[in-house]
Image (tube, rainbow, N blue to C red; front, side, top):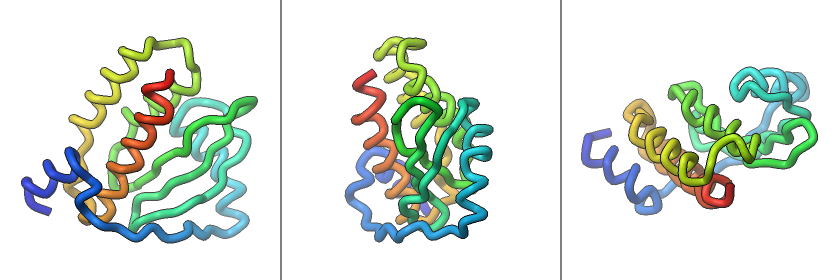
Length: 140
């Protein structure tokens, strides 16, 4: 992907097409997901349901212990540690103010290196991050 595409995808991911596919995993893989995701977000997780993916970018419906909260984005090709930190702050609700969460979101987007992804993976990732911002960060 060239630099212009990288910038365009971050600013207008809807300009690029992608075709999400159902994320199919074995029962054993699904049973291990709560423990694995718990390690990513540093919270207790009750249940994880695979939803869809585009290439290596995957979306999971995650049920934290005693809460219902945002789906989780996972991509082993990217360092999403800042996203996982922000996701956990949204779960905790009153740890950070809405303005601080928005500021952390903006910093996370600026630091996110999507150059290792295919164009469709990057567009899917950015749209899912925008949905997270709209539905959870802005409402915190």
